Image (cartoon, rainbow, N blue to C red):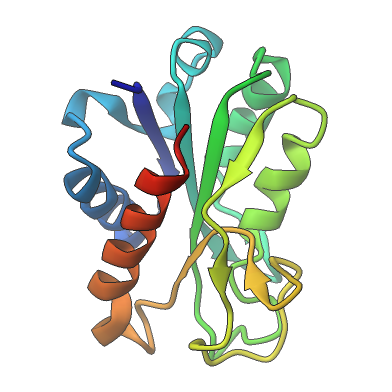
Length: 168
């Protein structure tokens, strides 16, 4: 069985709650769900699948705890690892930078040799624009628990089923 590790950055608790729901859906032990402040190269390198989540702040920025985490990501040897991204945002108030924290995570891993999994169609979301959308798909799971909380559980369930089939 593949070792899945989940890291999240969360200021208000929403992204942490999303990480916990993802872990539950994928049967990931709570010992493998961490705040990004606990990230180590060793833990990343010992995982087969790494799921990274951040709430989006300001004009599409990462949650503050991720700034040190990004440096660890860049140092880790991730060739052959599969990485799934998820982000929380507010598509109404910040509709022009919705869930762009995922873009920062993806960019930090651009030279890592990892493979990204878990793209999600953007059609069912309400927002203006996002750098996290490529070819009509988010580069990972986008969650708008502020305006579309009624869709959060279904989106997580659908994404985790997709991730499970994409893991090789």
